[in-house]
Length: 108
Image (cartoon, rainbow, N blue to C red; front, side, top):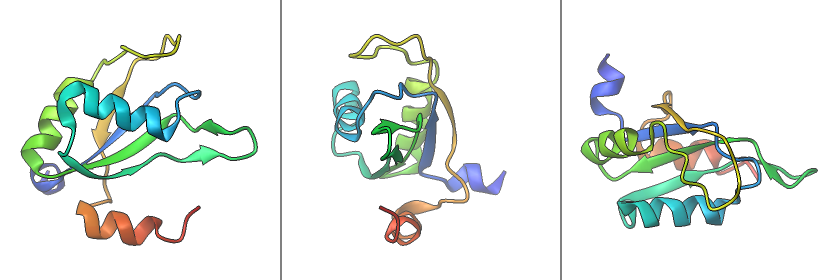
């Protein structure tokens, strides 16, 4: 659809719950996307201090978003023991950095 053609935001689902936001960012950098994303939203359950298992990442271009999608679909090279396998989808209705930042400015 129209969204998929222009979107630069992907949603990574099925992430290990014991991953931290820092570990997520280290993974993105280690896998070749350092400097190619400008926003990463990784919601955490603060009572259990555990990730909710998904993240939104905004890449710097639609092309990089497609490359990240292809790279992380089926990804399972975790630095912690986990059997989870990543499922990727478009992060709609998020579109680009402005919307990402605005949407989550008020969340913890």
